[in-house]
Length: 275
Ligand SMILES: [Zn+2]
Image 1 (cartoon, protein in one colour):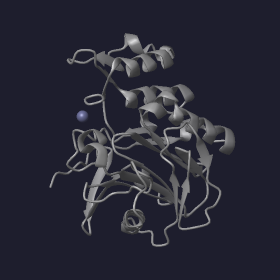
Image 2: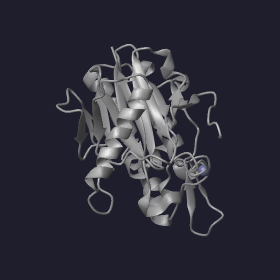
Image 3: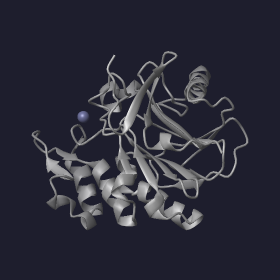
Image 4: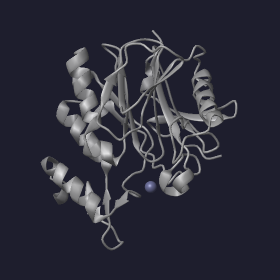
């Protein structure tokens, strides 16, 4: 079995399940977190093409519980974003059931304890944020549309404006997602990125965007775009912790929309404050 551990993440295999943990977040005992690994389970609770059968949703809910149990949490309450490719970030104050979905929302923030903030992906970027001084957590889903809308930066700005976080304290962990090696787009998407990120001079940086070998295709580094935006707000280099893993390159262990096509499954990132 391949091991995806590197300087920033540890690949854990236990009780037949697998997940990644960020070494940096493990320094904080008050934080429980994981990013699921493996294509034999799925975390989809939303509609895919047509309404998902009830059993499939129940299975996904059970998978969330299994993942949380395996990192030592037995009383599991989950706040899940709606995966709607919006730039909406909501503050979670309390939840009235074991599993609550926040529709039309892609980012969640809380300073409450014992609520897992959950997001899911198959190629999209997931960011887990933590301010260890004020004990505020956030979990954000940012596909290319979310990156175009700068949702990650908006979540950080909300942590600053609503909770008084100092950007110098905020840790950002970047889960596996599609990377520049595989994020190839057509001219229409390339044009949108060029227009939105004029401030980053995207068309002058081959690190951010370059012509693919394939005619009329471009490759874009959406992770790097976000890192630059976060540093502009004031996050410190050493606090931006990147798993560095491409979901397409590692599709044997990570769900990938580009590889699995229409019946693709989802991985999940979960983070909670336990005290
Ligand atoms: Zn790749």
